[in-house]
Length: 154
Image (cartoon, rainbow, N blue to C red; front, side, top):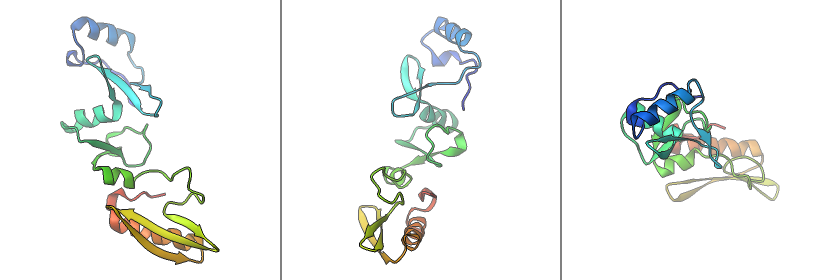
C-alpha cells in the first residue's frame, strides 16, 4: 500500500489547499477505490489513477499503458509497474470468467482438449491433446516464447 505523507505545494492549486490536505490526511492510505477496482487520487483538482501517478513520479514520463506485472491492480509498488503496449497488456490479462475450464488458451473438443494462442492478430493452433494438462503445457510454452516477460504465469 502507498501511505500519505506531506504533499508538496505543486500538487495543489494553492498553499491553503496544501495545508488543509496535509493536516487532514497524515499517515492515511493514498487514494480511494473506483468501481473498476483501481486506486484513484487527486492532484491539482483532477482525478488520477495511483499506479499511473507513481510511474510518472518515479520514471519522469507517462506511457499510454502502465501494466501491473503480477496482474494485481492494487499492487502499486514501483517494481510491479511497467510500460506496456496494448498487445502486451492484453497478454497479461486474467482468464475470462466465461472460460469453461478456467485455463487460458484451452478448450474442450469432444473428449480431447484444444490449445491455441492469439498473438499480434494471429491465432496459432497448438493442437489437440488427450489431457487438459498437455494442452495447458503447450499453451504455456507458446506464451513464454511469444510474449516473453508479458507471459501470464498462472
